[in-house]
Image (cartoon, rainbow, N blue to C red):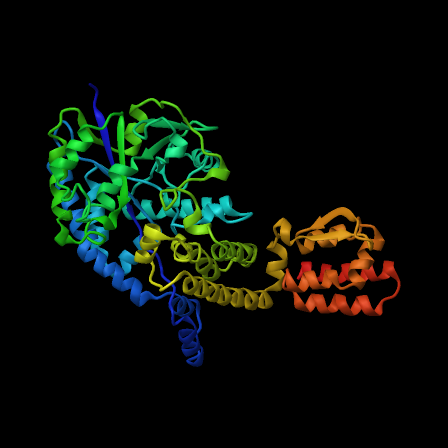
Length: 517
């Protein structure tokens, strides 16, 4: 019998939660004359709660669990079969730990320094970036590169393995990451995707040569969810019992992944979870055919057994029904995603670091997770994680935060219209489409003021004049490009200039003056 590789991956993340007193805090700061970006973020996000959660989890989980892991990493480092683990740590977790519990960073650095730890890439903001309409992969790449930078700066580490947020996965994502240089993608061992196959083998992504590791969710959840459940028929779960289950599991690799908060926060220290973690490596290594490994190592060691094919319309995750419904399953979530994505072109055009930061913080997946409307045990899991009483409150607060961001965008555009005009390119659903007076589409559309300027001469004159006289073009400039002054000038020209060619010429001059600043 060959060796079976046990791969442990710990998901380490804490979000920035929205503040229920957002409106009051904004009013208080406004009355004090203090509304810089730092003040706005302080009002929008509940950093008192965020700090409390981080400090509590550091004491119960992050620091003691990591110290236990470090002890075992060092204890077995020089043995023929060393102990190894992997961590996937969000950028926003590292931010909060640095501010409120720096001891976490120190013990994680100590773990990585042993050389027995693999760090797995993810998005910096643990975000839903990949699933934003129109610009999702553009934002995804930006956040992955930002995460790569923070891992380099914090741990001097450059990952080759990656997960998308919450193990979300499809063929397009896998090949996107592969083209970025990542060799291994980790995801969920979803039954309806695997079919008759086992999660305990290395697979190849469909359409590219990326290696795919699929989580054994049953064995993972035995620890992650069931460890302290006294009604479970296997309670109590001891290290030797769990090691015997691993030893009896067939396959090349048993990939176990769970929230790191499992070890002291979800299961409190009093449950015995820390002792379980302390003794598990030794119990596993008693079996001659078991070894510990990392995603990178098993992807290099074992040949792929088959293709793991997940079309984009069947995207999987490790949450709820193993799909995207935890984040975009209801109307509230879908509207929140649409509204957030609609602000992206303006944020990018303004090139304002404060605005960009606030927008990215709103892509954190937890905001949308709190809006889920589920039933039964799945609803109980959502309620456990959410700081809000119900999904409607979460949606209302997110909408309020979007309102704050929208107002900031509007104010900055009024201050810097030329910059916006120069940089703003809209998605197709916000483009202006030229039709004839009878509604016939001309086949011409524009997505920016610059395109409008150049295409006014190529559109049938009758169509241009129709849209000018009807106020369609001025409304688009005002409501979509947010250039109210230019819109008013075009409205005046459309009313006062009778001759069509002269009207178009004067409108082009007004647009040109904006483009030239």
